[in-house]
View 1 (cartoon, rainbow, N blue to C red):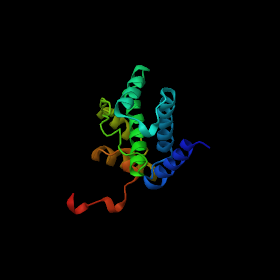
View 2 (view 1 turned 180 degrees about the vertical axis):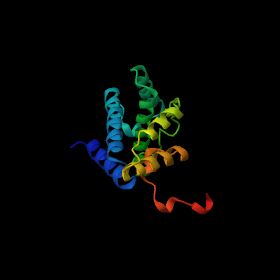
View 3 (view 1 turned 90 degrees about the horizontal axis):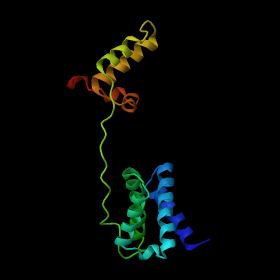
View 4 (view 1 turned 90 degrees about the vertical axis):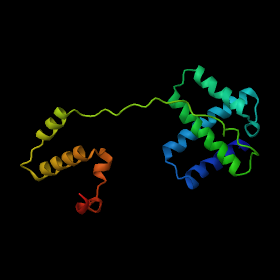
Length: 165
């Protein structure tokens, strides 16, 4: 086993145990850090000696390869996390990622249903059954409160403040 393999295993444990990240996020971070390490190996750069300009060069290469800004931001997040880990474990003296700036990401407004679509949705519910009454109430609450589906299904009775309206 290579020394780098051991470091990636320790980084994996750090992400899982100390940062409590999801399995998908951990997998993405490890995959992204591996891309960086492969690039450094090709360029004969020791990851513990990496500099800010060398990291900039890596991200310029990603851009030239046509990798979108959102993907670059995710990769950068993983790389920053890795170097933050190395710095916190005193494996490097300085963190070369502190000056890296995330690429600018355009914000997209979420798509929403029109009033007519909401009315059609409400009218499609069969309120002659108990489930239909429940479903209609859920649609009404979600629409009138502007809730996401995840927020709606996570509601509890204790979340209602009737006295406050």
